[in-house]
Length: 122
Ligand SMILES: CC(C)(COP(=O)(O)OP(=O)(O)OC[C@H]1O[C@@H](n2cnc3c(N)ncnc32)[C@H](O)[C@@H]1OP(=O)(O)O)[C@@H](O)C(=O)NCCC(=O)NCCS
Image (cartoon, rainbow, N blue to C red; front, side):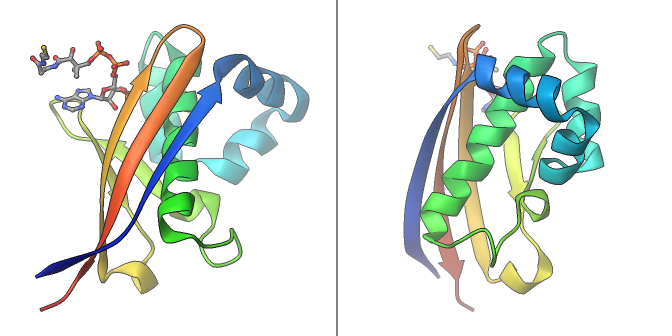
């Protein structure tokens, strides 16, 4: 059985992600994204759109949990992609009683994400 915990959404201006990367360089990437996420974004020909989509996804997850970044760190929320391209979320082990469904979209200028968090009870 699953119980709804919350929903979350975020809209990111891709230019701001570019600026952060220019300003903070590799530190920005390493602080926010896992290696798998970075590799995936680098494998795409729209690196910044994809990166911004994952950033929006993480913000959406924070909102859905209504939690601060102290309890759930940027990097510990991993937004990966299945073979068909659809995104899925991996949470840290202490969040393994939760399930997240996520959807991401991006254009040249903006990326947005929407997610639903459910509590799994057995
Ligand atoms: C893959 C697809 C969802 C991408 O849509 P798009 O408008 O070109 O691109 P968007 O910017 O809105 O979305 C891109 C994101 O969709 C997500 N995505 C990719 N494949 C997906 C899939 N099969 N299912 C769900 N989400 C998918 C990814 O998160 C992707 O971004 P990322 O690679 O950076 O993580 C779409 O082209 C598609 O093939 N849809 C298949 C379903 C279909 O036929 N829909 C028709 C509706 S009329």
